Amino acid sequence: MSVPTRSHTLRDIMIGCLVIAALAAIPFLLPSKAFQDFVIRCSSMALFATSLNLLVGYTGLSSFGHGLFYGLGTYSFALLMQKTGLPLPAAFVLTLLLTAATAVVVGAICIRLRLIYFAFVTLAMQMLAHSIVISWVGLTGGDQGLQGGIPRRVVAGIDLGNQYHLYIFSAVLLVIGLLLMRHIVSTSFGTSLRMIRDNEVRAAFLGIVVWRVKLTVFVLAAVFAAVGGIVMSLFVSGAYPELINWPISGDAIFAIVLGGVGSFLGPTVGASILLLLNDVVTRQTEYYGLALGIIILLFALGLRRGLLDFITQRLGGRPAGGIS
Amino acid sequence: MLQIRGLTKRFGGLAAISDVTMEFPAGSLTAVIGPNGAGKSTFFNLISGAFRPDAGEIVFKGETITGLDRAAIVRRGIGRAFQVASFFPSMTVAENLMAAIAAHRGQWGDLNHRFPRQGVRDRAMEVAEMLGLHDNADTLSANLSHGDQKLLDIALALALEPSMLLLDEPTAGMGPEERWRMIEKVQRLWQQQHLTLAFIEHDMDIVFGISSSIRVLCYGRLLAEGTPDEIRNNPAVIEAYLGTPDAEEDA
Image (tube, rainbow over all chains, first blue to last red; front, side, top):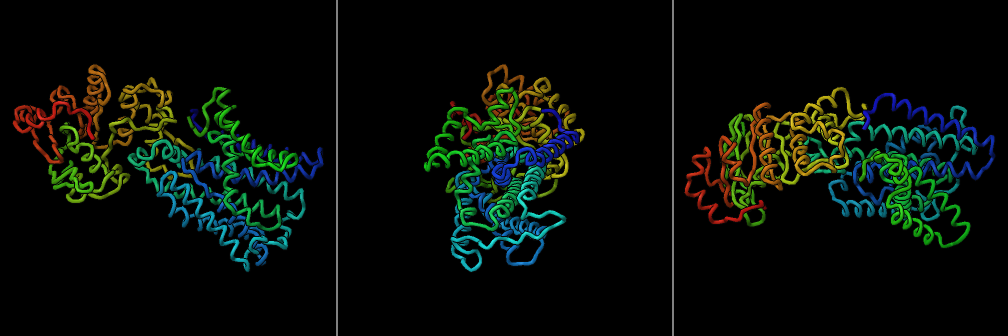
């Protein structure tokens, strides 16, 4: 491993700026509303999947209920925008705070559990959240979801009712989110995540307070998932029960499996593949689940790893997450 | 350095360690021996905080550490290595050590700085050199030989600059020649680093060859303690070993 330095951070930021610049230019060359929609949805899913990979790939915590925080992001943001007169930035920050507080409670219950128990209890938490949303019709609109749209007040010249503005806004959130998560995994804290994943007992005997690290990463991951949720909430102008139901957690896991747990950008690549598949396959057949299942099997049995992990290993590299 | 008084640990109805009282003086090199299932590993687990004792007291450098958690005990200066080499397989040797050093310096919660911070790699190479691992610094630890993995485990403990080191069978799974190479390294380490060192060992040639003092555990009790000569001629010890000639692995 080359010792990371400040220049790595600068390089990452440069790449992020280039990506945003390229995305900003594309609609002028190729005016396609479908493409912009795709990028917005992809930003949402990529933030969500990458945040889940902080748990699954980097810490070895297989959460099956991470969609709880994604859904919480959509609902609390949409509710705050609809029911209060708060400006968007305030609703944004409040949503993240609310998600973090929820994650502290859920995390405190879950992180001491091991492996399959952790997976099941996180899943149960997600189901609980979903049934609350379904039953609390007065607040959430029940199974109809939060309708009526969300007011898009113009903030600092940015009008999120405008498709192009929302498209750039989503891309910027994605890039900032990825940069921050990239930074998190490259710090000493990030290294302690890998230590816990590799050998929790050894990590504890080197003086790491394992539960504190796990709870911290659980909360951080929840916050980034909520950012993904906010993007989705803006895209759909509201919130729907499907966005907080447990299959959404499955989507994030699929994205990670397709893209690769061992590469930082694996889940982002996976999210794009997943959405492309979704768009292409649903146009051809109604057996979407069947087609997706076959493709996942091909990845799992054929490549035996996600696409990006496969490529990095072919190029002779060791995956960043260091999964062997 | 380390005093243990009336230490007891029960698993269900079975007393794995019962009423053990002993002392590890500063700078001693002590072998802990005993037949299969004597409770040697449990004893180390109690000292290092993996298990909570049911009764008794553990005093380290004059401070009671009974019931503290693993991380807290490590921070007070008791490092340990394991019977089955325990390390971080997805990392290289240098990364393993850098991670341990960062953990020791309390940087494991550091979200502001990139890993590793200044000087950590240099320190990692120093530690690697103490155990002759520096040539393999950039080898993935999962790919090391068994002996080198055991050394890495000890190096991880050493990275914390402990004043006391507990080694659970440093020579487990090694051939006779390799055992001696390992134990000579351990002995050199003990001298150079001025450590208080306790180790569990089944090879009696090694035990009587290098230790300054020996503790014999049998069925969770302290059967005997003394110098190698005293232990060699102790009838109770002879009987305990003659009774179980094929004592090999600790439970």
